[in-house]
Length: 150
Image (cartoon, rainbow, N blue to C red):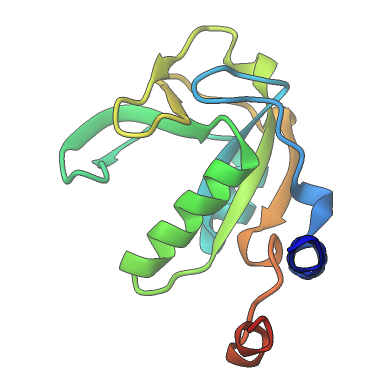
């Protein structure tokens, strides 16, 4: 059994991009960084103008006004990007890593997402730490890899 555990741990590490794993937040608790998910087509505009709250439709199909959403951990942002991609024509997403002290004017907890918050004011582009290609966070499994585990 111990050999199997070592094998699984080693195999999983092969597929994780460990540069992105550390998280400094749990649930609604804000750590040092926040993460904003956006389609890749929006990246250059956000880099230029910063983040601007928008009106839209939430995950549960309810409309919202003047909001800007952030995830409190990178793994939560990645999970959202995968979910968005699965029901929005497989669009590719980027994740902005943002300094959390840029939400000094307060924030609200997102009742639909335990790792989400939102604000109703703009966040300047100077708060952007980096842009992460959501697809690069984890190396892709293929069927042969899964079959080799058994």
